Length: 440
Image (tube, rainbow, N blue to C red; front, side, top):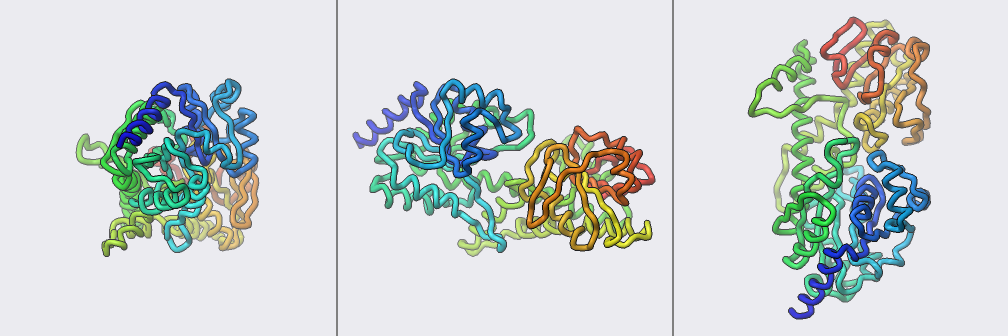
């Protein structure tokens, strides 16, 4: 117990004095914003990123993430508080190691932990006493203790809560959100034991405005997947309502806007062409998969995923109807997708429903182009396209514009004036209907 106390107090002293060296593994949408915030409060940050292009950009102070201004990144790089490399050779220098790597799904909706496991193995052979390891990647409850911990202890010969500390603190990044950033979004922290919780909470309190400790790493893991499951289920509910309103000949946007005037007991969610990003289409299935270990079927999660995944097919069905009214077959049509990012005002294409719409339209034989001010070019599943300019000529030469992502910088009145027909999947025109606009 004396050794644990001494090890813990030494690390806590480094953290509180901000003399601790912090490693951030994975400099993507989660890792880079966090690394910059950690460096901005005075810690020295060593980033580990397997993509050499990203490493070069970080070390030259150039941001590739929308939410990280180049000026902020350049400042901490110039002052020597942030540097990146492609290997793990400097792990022994690190006092705190934060892991922010992808946790995707396989095609069968099974968790794919290859990146978490690979990083953990790299750390295990270099781990030394007195280090804190914190996993931020979203995953199922049990990953930190059941997957990471055995690898770390076996590979290092060290023991958690005696020689090193281990925690889970799920990321809460919302790309493009100008109001809530890494720093002012509260941080849930759970440790594999009381010492790990104390150390991890002390570290995050130096960087994040509010830390919310919970009883265990498993609880912290479940917090995150619940948050995204909540959104997935509610989005699926309004998507299903959109399907029903389409059958009933009702305007789902009118119904929802009226419902959301109620000042209590309701929360606004809107339908769309599907769900995208790094969280909502993926994270609930981590919980769904884990629940089966307990002979428990998560019916809401399965149904929500089924509904949301079908929305691109519904968009295609609406496209067919519109083209049929125009006496056009899809194979003879020219379609312009307006926005391909998964949400407005970001360049993030991960799991974007617009890409599924693009694939389905091309399968029908349609000629498809796109305009997106945030995505100058895209390469996906063998499809390579460049964003076309949004001119009156481009709009007129397309039979149909499908509004798939509602970026705020687009002049939608200009689009309406020059487009032959518009399918609005985001409700941009819901309060100003016109003959050439069809709502989802």
